[in-house]
Length: 335
Image 1 (cartoon, helix red, strand yellow):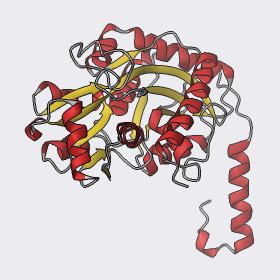
Image 2 (image 1 turned 45 degrees about the vertical axis):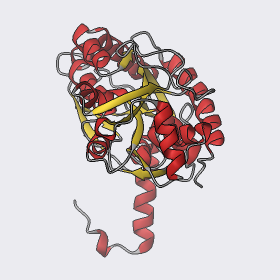
Image 3 (image 1 turned 30 degrees about the horizontal axis):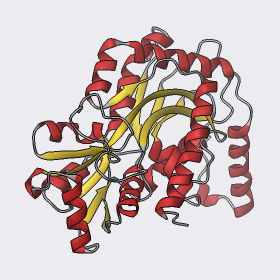
């Protein structure tokens, strides 16, 4: 029988809500035939970005490894620097049917920079499933800007004294932190201009609404190869295999700069071990697929196919500490 909530008093409604919360919090037993319904992979970004690509590749290829009737779909839930989607999954029933494919923005930067918006511990408040891949970030400018080196970019930023802007896919994300850290270490002031989703960033650059971005290479690789954007440097300590002629930021004159991003699959805390193991095996099987590996490598992501739930937890704990330190250096704590 359906109940009209407008006809409930405050006490019955509160009791109903408490009952629903208690039901969601009860321990979940693994289904004998997992999965027996559709699994939803939540991507906490707008469609078309690097994390979305990873989520869709896994949704397409994990099914056969889970069973002949297994079906996975992607649901995009952007917002709050990607913390909105993470919080949605964190509060979901821990039965293996709601998963998160998140990035360093979601599970590294957001909880370090905005703990009130992202009030979770990446390693302890989720069930780690698998590391999907790691990737360098790239310092990118519009080709039409005429800037061809990091040295030229720094000189222009210093000359303009903060009037030039840099784009990111949202406040408190990896792009925000990466550019803020660059500005701090290079002593090159710039203004943060956040956009909604990674797909909007290359468009803003091409239109020269902003002067630069530091973003996951996978998100801008098409425009780099088309010649509309220029990759000046990568953020890791070694050069990117897809762009061996492009220097690292340390090589380009910004000592001490090192940052990378990654993609990880997690579920709500308390998922049954057998379900978590099944999902981990399916993810690793998908990541061994040559077509999947090629798509990820071509987009600038180095796929991982050997993680375990335990190693994923250790990875998240180490990365959370690393990003907390980077946020402190950049002075990007926002609450």
